[in-house]
Length: 123
Image (cartoon, rainbow, N blue to C red):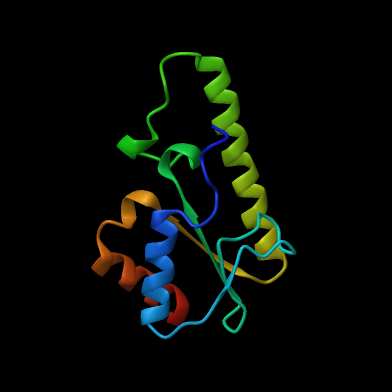
């Protein structure tokens, strides 16, 4: 698990590339905000998290299937991740930020993703 990178993942790079091509400028991995958001758009007061379906427990996604070995360890670890995500989003909303979560499985369809990003940022 120590080799799993949390920054600059392929799905994150796809989202960043789309945003940049759409004309948006953003900041990355801000340490001063709860949850260290992947992408921050201060001008719009918007935040985008790019979450892996497995690690963050995407509901009803086949990629989020939990391992059948060492069940207690994985349940505790993944539940803790989900709880931390909920707290981060809640804290950010209290600070006045709008938050969007983009899941890894959504990155494959760039047309839908672009529409989702546009409606979040302009809607």
